[in-house]
Amino acid sequence: MSEHANSTKAVTPFRQSLYELLLDERNKSGKKSFINRFTLLLILVNLFVLLLESAPAIYAPYHDLFFAFDVFSVGVFSIEYLLRLYLAPEDPEFANKSSPRLAYMTSVLGVIDLLAIAPFFAGLLFAMDTRVLRVIRLLRILKISQIFIEGTREFIQLNRGRTLRQKVHALLFTSDYGGRLNQAIEFFLIFWIVISVLSIVLESVEGINAHFSHHFAVLDVASFVVFFIEYSLRIYAYPEENLKQSSFMSRFNFMRSPSGLLDLMAILPFMLELVLGGTLDLRFLRIVRMLRLLKLGRYSSASDTMFSVIKKEMPVLTAGMFMIVILVFMMAAFGYLLERDAQPDKFENIPQSIYWAVITLASVGYGDISPVTPGGRLITVLLALVGIGIFAIPAAILASGFTDQMRSRRDQIRHDLLVMARDIDFDGEGHQEFVDYAKSHHLSMPEINQIIQQINDEAEQSEPPNTDLQSLVLAADNPQFALAQYRTLVAHLSQLAAIADTEYISRQLQVSGQSTELERSVWERVEKSRPES
Image 1 (cartoon, helix red, strand yellow):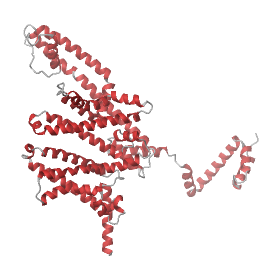
Image 2 (tube, one colour):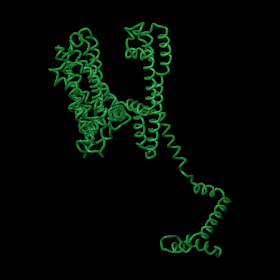
Image 3 (spheres, helix red, strand yellow):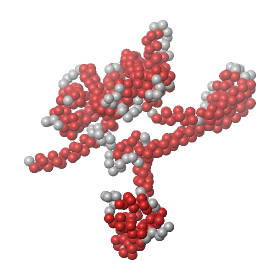
Image 4 (cartoon, one colour):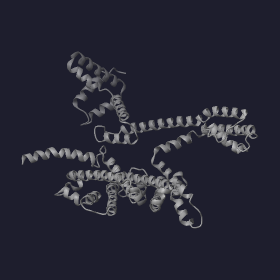
C-alpha cells in the first residue's frame, strides 16, 4: 500500500506539470495555443489531401507519399489521444468523476479524438475498400469542433451579458472579448483564402482542371459561402467600432473602406457569374477572384505599417514620381525624334517611345526596342545612368519611412508597456501577464527584461531614503550622535514655537484623547522658553 502511495506521489507532480504545459487553458506560458493551431492546420491539410486522393491520376503515382502523410497524421492524433487519456485526472472537466479516463473516453471530445484515428487502424486490421476509408477519414473534420468547443466556452464567459451585435463583433474583430475563438476563426478564414487562391491558380492548368473541374467548382461555391457570411457579419457588427456614429453611416463607411471593398470583390465575381453567366462571357472574372489574396493583409500588421508609411511619405513620393514622369516624356520625345526615320516600325509614335523610355529608365532593357542611331544610343546610355539614381529615390524613401515607422511603433509599444508595468505586481501573476502582452507585440525576452529592469530602477530611485530609521540605528550605537540628535530636535521645536500659531496648538493638545501627557508637558516647556515678542 505504501509503495502505491509513493508511486502516486511521484507520478502526480509530473502529470500535473505535463498537463499545465500542454493542455491547461489557464497557463498562458504553456503550449496549449500552439497545439490547437497545429492541430487545426493538420486537420485542414488532411481535408485537402483527401481531395487530391479522389483523383486517380494523382493518387496512383504518389500512393506511397499519401500513405506516409496518413501515417504521420494518425501518429500525431494518436499521441494527442493518449496524452489526453493519461492527463484526464488533471483536467477539471473529468477530475471529479469516479473514473476520469473513462469519462474522457465517453465524452464528446474523447469520441471525436477516437474517430480521427480509428479508420486507419480499421484499414490495417480488416480488408476494406479504400474509397470507404477515405469517406470515414472525413470524420477527422470533427476535431475542428473540439477546438471551437473549447474556444466557445471561453467566449461565453467573456461575453456574458453582452448584446448579439457585440458578440458578433468580438468574433470577427480584434478585441478583449474574442479570446481563442476569435483566433480560431481568423485562422480558418486565412486557410480558406489560401485554398481559394490556390484553386484559382491550379484551375488555370488544363491538365489539373481536367481531373478536378468538379472539385474546383465545389471549392468556389464553398469559398463564396464562407466569404459572404463573413462579409455580412462584418457589416452587421461594424457599428461597434465607432459607437458615436449612427449604425447606417458606420456600415456605409465600412462598405466603402478598402477592407470592405476587398471583402465585396471576394464574392462579387461569383454572384455576377451566377446572374449573368448565361448571357455574357465572364471568364475574366475568375482572375478577379485572385483579389481574395489581398484579404490576408487584414491579418498582418505589416500591411498597415506599409500603408501608413506611403501615406506619410506621399508628398516626397509624389515629387519623385513627378520627376520620373517628366524624364520619361522628355526622353521618349528625343527617342522618337532620333529613331523614327531609322526604325519607323518601333518608334512610330511617342506612346511607343514611352514604353522604350520606361524599360530603359528602370534598367530592365528587354531588347525588343533598342536604338540604332548614334544619337539614340547616346540618349539610351544617359537614360540608363540616370535611371539608376532616379528609380532608387522612391525605394530609399519607402525604406527610410518604413524604418522610422517601425522604430516609432516600437517606441510607442515600449512606452505603453512602461505605463502598464507601473501598475503591475511583478511578484505575482502580473509578471507573466506582462510578459505575454509584450510577446504579443513582438518584443524579445531581452527587451522585456530591459523594460522590467528600468521599472525596478525607477521604483528604487523614487523611494525616499528612510533617514529617521538610519538615525535611530546610529543613535543606538553612538551616544554622542544620540545627544546631538536630541539637541537638534529641541532646536527644531524652538523654531516651530517661534513661527507657529501656539494658541491653536495649545488648545488642540488640551483636547482629551488627542495627545499624550508627554506631548503636553514638552510643549508647555517649549512655549515658556520661547522669547517674548
